[in-house]
Length: 256
Image (cartoon, rainbow, N blue to C red; front, side, top):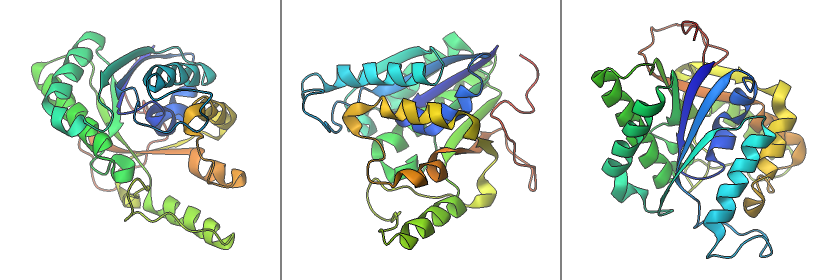
């Protein structure tokens, strides 16, 4: 049984970032999913689904439903920090994540990188806190912790998607604008997972986040271009130049 911990900022960050990769391992992975906030400052696409007062609780339930749609029943940890307020809590978050890593001893930890995928300050902060926690616990000697992955979008993939949008007369995604995807250099990608075999499950999982009306602005026929490939930068261990891109988060690790 593989052990993995995912550390993200909001419900649905986990679905987008690693849902397909872990759905492939639904029968052989023990997952701890840590969400720093409950997304209580997020959208309410349909007022019949939630109020501002109970949105956090509703989004927690949506996240649980999304994992079930992916075929997983994770150990969900909602830290319930203020949505939009994480930058002031980085040290506190790092300390709490350290405790969780010490308890669960995951082989692989997945979180945001310095770009936060969309430049969202909450994403950037939780990624920095989780990265700090991983490194501190490795130095401490906590078992596991063999690989740290940062979710990412390859710049080439983003440009291909933008070209498809232009062909349809639609505005491309502008990485200079707030909350829009940022790409990382293609050669920075260390793990690239083909999740097409579980694509339908991932779509169903995203649709579980009903309050957020996921991907409603993207033509449905382009969803596979965004969802069927999941890419990661290997933040630890350091890679050798020219190392082959792995096809799975656990590839190359010793047997569990």
